Image 1 (cartoon, rainbow, N blue to C red):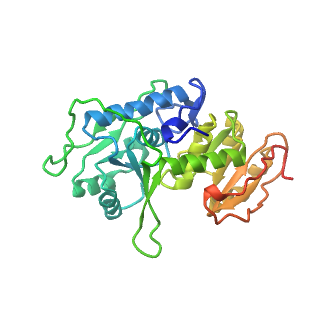
Image 2 (image 1 turned 90 degrees about the vertical axis):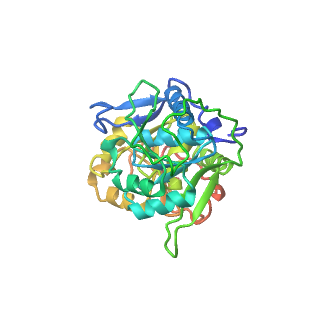
Image 3 (image 1 turned 45 degrees about the horizontal axis):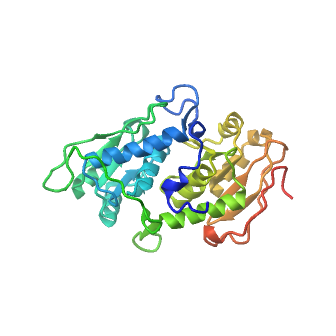
Length: 344
């Protein structure tokens, strides 16, 4: 990870023909009934296409773009395209109401709202919030596998007196190099004690944390992760998604977590590791079919997130070995020796 100060550098690691994002069979009509994948080469092209579209609608590099973020390949690719190209991504929980989304749009000073393909989420609350704030809304079209293109289409004609963006200014995006000090994501705290607080996260902070994860788990291009955490949480972005991509490995994006089908997904995709919250592990441990999956595990908890290393060479149930430094930042995690043949 040395010399990889930004997300754009991180995404250059994987081999062009190696799978980066994988969609399980039946996850959407675009993927059909069979698993479909986006290679690293196609992902890099899709990321560049996001910048192309943003340039044509007048959204300049460095602007904040809010993104309604259901669990999909389109969300992952759009989020990576925004940040790698030098825009600031503000991923939003699709279950939020119009008032909450309006608050976030105003707090982040978002210039644009991206919503997912219609079949992936109900975007009506987000569209209403954007209309109230006065920013345009663009829809991410369903990804056509093999195309390497992610396109944006206008959702509605916005009142031009209330925003500075036009439907198409016909100008190509001029993408300048991004500094490691530049902000990549704007996320909000949960707001447990007061109003949610805005947290800017820089490229340098993300790549430093990814470097720690790669060292801790000894991830390689042979790893396959299954992603079940939200894309609007930092754990889902950095631990679940970026760490494996930075190693050149593949990430299986599951639209909806289902404990009954989860063991089969582990087998089909030969998953080597994943990260999840305790609620998910509780449901998995209550499902007897999981114990039939040949897996040895190394678990520890970090900010209520549990990380699991799988091995398909032994057979043992999940073992909850909680790490004593769970409350520390990701970058302060004490390295654990990865165990492929069972817990030591």
